[in-house]
Amino acid sequence: MENACESCLMPFAKDPGTRESDKYCSYCFRNGELCYKGNDLKEFQKIAYQNMRAHGTNPLLATFFAYMIRYAKRWKK
Image 1 (tube, rainbow, N blue to C red):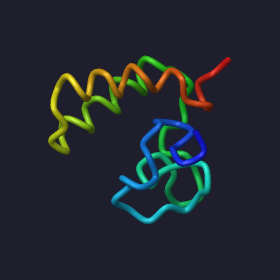
Image 2: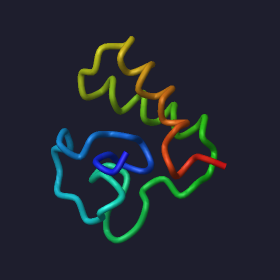
Image 3: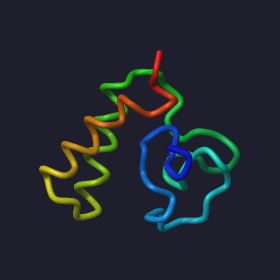
Image 4: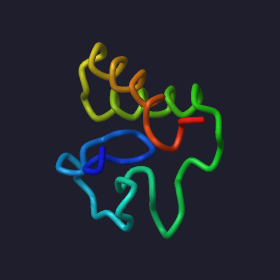
């Protein structure tokens, strides 16, 4: 998906911030580097879920979106 973040799959059209990268959204990439430096998919999914809920995303949608992160380019093995 070329129009979505390679880390969290958020569509660039829905990104409320200013993107610094062609590959990542403003939540995942700031100040020239990825915000989440680890490589633990489950931990990243948990953080993404918590952030989506904090921004008012419905719990079911947040669960679905967090699950889908496993298919993002960054997390494919």
